[in-house]
Image 1 (cartoon, rainbow, N blue to C red):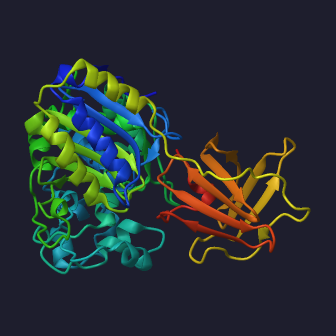
Image 2 (image 1 turned 90 degrees about the horizontal axis):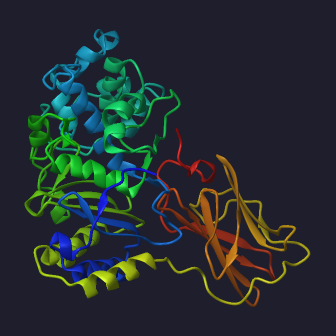
Image 3 (image 1 turned 180 degrees about the vertical axis):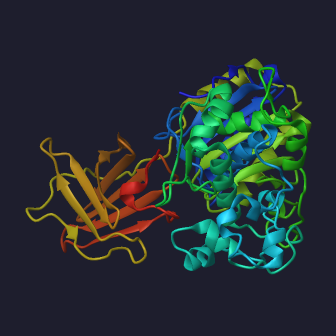
Length: 460
């Protein structure tokens, strides 16, 4: 388990439960939006919370770029401890590269520029940095001269955050997780946070964090409380002020809530500020309303998620509710579930089970898919790619959870459909088989950004 907040009711916290209900409905019914969890805090207490089965409160969820906000917190803690100076040059933390990094703009790049995604590069640099040095992302990044003066332009840029993580590792003498556990996670009650690492063993920093929805909410609450938790100051107030205000303008971003400016690994928004990650991982902080909203999901339209919060939750804050509406919402949220596949029973496999020994589903990245039945005659799907293989038992009319997977299947004639959710992540894989021909195809609902099927699970 993770952070334990005081549980209350929407009406006791000045929220009309009907607005939260409408928000949950909007998340379920909006095209390209799939919610996995929702936690709403007000005045530091839980007003409403729910998880769409097979997702559960105690299961960590892949954060993708919401990981950046946790990395930034590590920098803020290091600043408070006197280990990092925001105005120090980046190159000063990498003396072994001093003779190689000769570009004047790079040498003027400061820690605060990395925090603000204002390194001076006009576009993302991760591929170019790794092409320059496949084994040392920081070196590749610092050998890639900025296009403009650092601090002058915004570009969402993974090596900025990776380099911040490396700076914390260097000044602390340990890993990001080792630094954060006693200084951030323990005070906030977060006891389940893991991080994907690169081949050097370093946490990615810019992505790859796994934690619970409560932990996401706790980070937002810490910033809402201006860096103080249970009377203990964890982040300096001037750090919080800088992190949650515009440090660089980004008017060219397409969506309205992505063009309001950028702080220190937080986006400014039309309301409040937030950290977010691919496919709809959100930590939304609304200081004016004393509200934090944490959301996980598999959403391709992330602006629609925020639009739903603005349209349904915000009008409900400060509006009278009722005990009856509270009870109805509690029951509704307790019964949340993503629908399993429905259809006829799977029955028996033919003597020669369908399998795919060649690449399937176009860009699915899979090398093979096999269908079989175990000793209990339960269907099992095995997925193989370059990272290894995963075997998932398949439920009929339900999501059957086993380890890091939840699978559901149904059959109509010779057509078999199996959906596999990787429940530590946003991702869903659709497997389809024709029992008459033996053909099998597979396609991702959302493509994993940096994992294969055998590594779509939380890592230490």
